[in-house]
Length: 379
Ligand SMILES: Cc1cc2nc3c(=O)[nH]c(=O)nc-3n(C[C@H](O)[C@H](O)[C@H](O)COP(=O)(O)OP(=O)(O)OC[C@H]3O[C@@H](n4cnc5c(N)ncnc54)[C@H](O)[C@@H]3O)c2cc1C
Image (cartoon, rainbow, N blue to C red; front, side, top):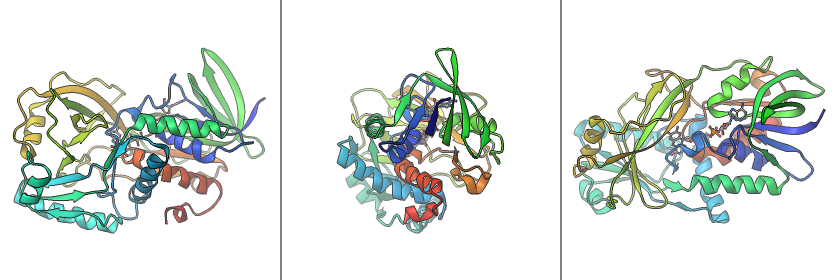
């Protein structure tokens, strides 16, 4: 039976970043992906925002991996000429009662090491975004956007240059028979044909299927519950592109989303969303008409939004670890210290800011595998 050093299940941005991190000549690293191309699930269904690390609870993996990952990602994009832009982001208060919340966000950001936020008066806001209305705003200069497809392609190319192999159209059916000598027995299927091989190290980066993959691995506990939380996007019809920055409302307290915000893509197009809708099964449909509530939410900061200007774009699904109304949970990255199985890493709940955090997260995983304190990697 074929034996390999490392199997990574999933060629989304996380599996690819880990492949790049672990690949080196003389080491066999295989990335198994059920689809025919890389990044066909959540990694190509997001906002492509390089987040600053503003909102997440202090000390959480989301906060630390985001702040570290943002710096690594900008450097990586610069080195590899991956299209990205430090657009900056505005969080706009439109009512007096939102100012307290904006202040809390500022305090949280500072605690997370995001020390470059700037308060804007209504006049300063108008200077930055003439069409946006607000009574105060926070400006985050380090928030930006990235061409996530070129980024994933570059990760893939770097990994393969270091002898990693990507095997597409291959679904991992089960991972069983763990024993300390041989590691894991992986059963996979390509073109209807089933085959098996052994791997000493196994990285479960299967995104929306991570829990399902882990459930098959004897002794891989605990497995957190998984909830699908869909986010829809609508793009702005016509040639009018009103914003120069990303524009966010002040999120309501204790909600899962950031409010219906405006982001830009690398081509300069404007899109709105995503919202948050818990669903039972994977379904990427987007209704033809944006709900009236979207128009109302956007007009709070952009009153000139024309009727009927929102066109359905796409949707993505967050692998959440909490149900609607429950407190937000952190990324869950499990190594041997959690489940007792050497060589196994499970990645659960890698929702936003997973794209931003990807390079830092890959370093974190390598530290875990090497038995080092992964938090040291974040200093
Ligand atoms: C609506 C939305 C907006 C977001 N916006 C942002 C943002 O602006 N900035 C940001 O930083 N983050 C954002 N994120 C988060 C980011 O997109 C994710 O954290 C990231 O894409 C997760 O990558 P992944 O590789 O874990 O998952 P995925 O991209 O889903 O990859 C998992 C891969 O595993 C494969 N797979 C699953 N099961 C198997 C199997 N059995 N065998 C073989 N292959 C398998 C799948 O086919 C898939 O390709 C957003 C997410 C959503 C949903």
